[in-house]
Image 1 (cartoon, one colour):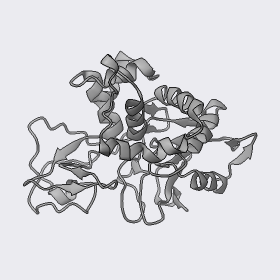
Image 2 (tube, helix red, strand yellow; image 1 turned 60 degrees about the vertical axis):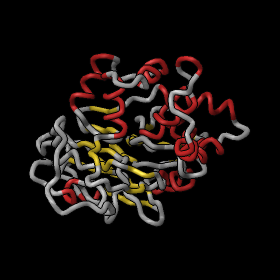
Image 3 (cartoon, helix red, strand yellow; image 1 turned 90 degrees about the vertical axis):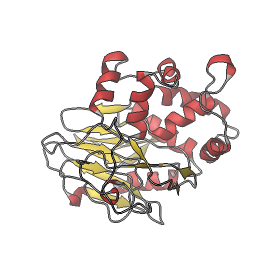
Image 4 (tube, rainbow, N blue to C red; image 1 turned 120 degrees about the vertical axis):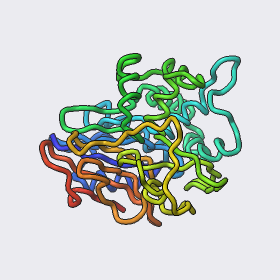
Length: 303
């Protein structure tokens, strides 16, 4: 089996269709497939683009027919929380201006298709948080051993609506594990620095390269993005900092989430981020054949 690992799609239905066709997948009875190939969707199928409904339907059909696997991203997790009521009739994710703006395009794509929204939300709630087979590991944001083990032992690989509702209870081990896996670890921005993220939201924290050793590193070396105006000194680690360095002797791990800039490249010999951005909002893909070492030539950046 050859795996085609596909990065964050974010509602770009036409581009995703073109990517699959370029990869040699053919559409039969509304389902894309290719013999001896399996597409792996790394999460964040929704938001930003204008066709999230169509993207979810395409991926859902591929998964149900056995031609793909998909894992949950933070945008699917947030969408579930935004649309699901918890205790006392309150939505799990507040309907703030920031949160409404994030899901606006997604909800617009379901206008006139409310039944599809219910069906898709149920499907999203059952998406696994990670994949771990003999050939590779995949997660949306962070392969955190402690969080993965907690999920594996407490709820198993398969998620459902009630588990996700429980994960919105602040301060619980379940909440911490789920959010670490789908959103990854962050550090506070120093010296009262505030930045805007890709969606225009103000941020007081920054995402860092958890897969590397962090000790004695500078802020610029640690931060995922080079757009932050960070001081030149060594990073000040929080007292509860956990080293999550991904050793090069482990099997390959793939993730998305980080909106990397520049020419797509491997993070390490066995670490691959599939979420890269440019003015064309292209989609990152890595073709993996079992037993092969990761190589830059198998990294594609489409459309």
